[in-house]
Image (cartoon, rainbow, N blue to C red):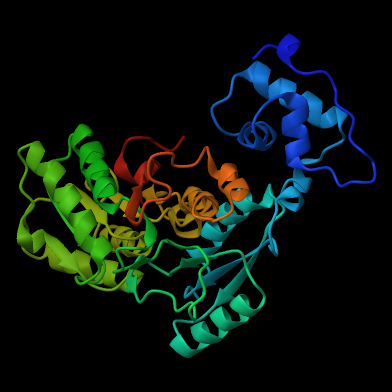
Length: 365
């Protein structure tokens, strides 16, 4: 849309609060287009984005007025329920949620249930009493949990880094299987051929998915992962240390270990060093989580998988918008997950490989 095709300025009565619809009318575009232009998101031509922002500036419409201009009995608050006591996983999700919702002037309130059903019930009751506009549920790890009890209320709920066995719910999770495949692809590309996998509890869904992705990619390269080279245990350094003793005892050659967490990887690295095994010269190590206090302080620093929890949280916020009943609220999510954002089920989002020295792809200066 060319600027010359924009309607001329239309007067706005100063006695009435300015709304996003006023900007849309003055610019000759839709409410959704104004939202995209002012949020800096979505697929718009640059001239359209610039023109809309110019109209908004001329009308003295501020982006944080966007939420106040939406109709309906809304409180501009969203609840975030977590079972993560330490905040290791919930805080990055919260940051992403706030980035998504903050542009519309929506506040996010975090409540930690400590995995206590009665405390969760109290928090949900309090949120419903305060008429929150939606609830996002997150966990300490992506484990199955019961659906949230909304006491008969009809408000949107999105599960982020948490999942429920409910066909009507929307759960956003990291692509653990894809992450495991990516680790195998990277290590094979570095010339590694003799693998082991040291990971968390055997009954965890993420453990199973990561292993399956890892094994499948190795198989594509003609490499079999022996059963005795897959060791499951706790998410701890102590387990990583103990696993090395079991791996090295048979004396079979080994040149790469994929660890299910950075804590496990730290234990593995320390145990190998204690036995005179060089990382990455003799054995390459890859962790999981990109927990920077562990990954960067390790000797050598850990190559690891980042689950992109901030981005997962941002998409959870946009999905919450998209599931809202108010069409003006839904318009704010036009640029988020366009094909799947309102569908129920499990949505897997991509992880990233963060390359440091422990895999042998880079060297310390």
